[in-house]
Image (cartoon, rainbow, N blue to C red; front, side, top):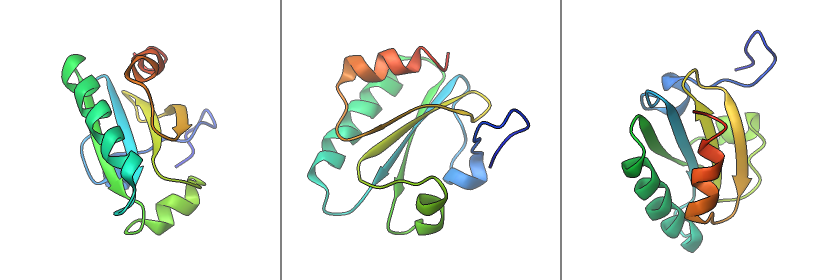
Amino acid sequence: MPGRDGKVRLDAADIGAELGERATLVQFSSAFCQPCRATRRTLAEVAAMVEGVAHVEIDAEARLGLVRALEIAATPTTLVLDARGRIVRRAAGQPRKADVIAALGAAL
């Protein structure tokens, strides 16, 4: 997970899907989390708007090892990865679309 530069990196094997060409929005969710549903819609909309950006949703309960390794304390939690899989932003709670777009700026 830690890269040579000391930043945490995730790859397709870690998240269970291919990384986006330019960035990836990784969402940790749980089954009965109401804000997770709204977050899913927001992140999917942003990914559809910005070319080369992927949205990957991870079931936190099914991936407890990854949740612990990344110190995910609540759902929804969103990680913004750059093209190489480095975590460049992280936020807990339901994000606003404008905030997601602004966070993507750090990855693009």
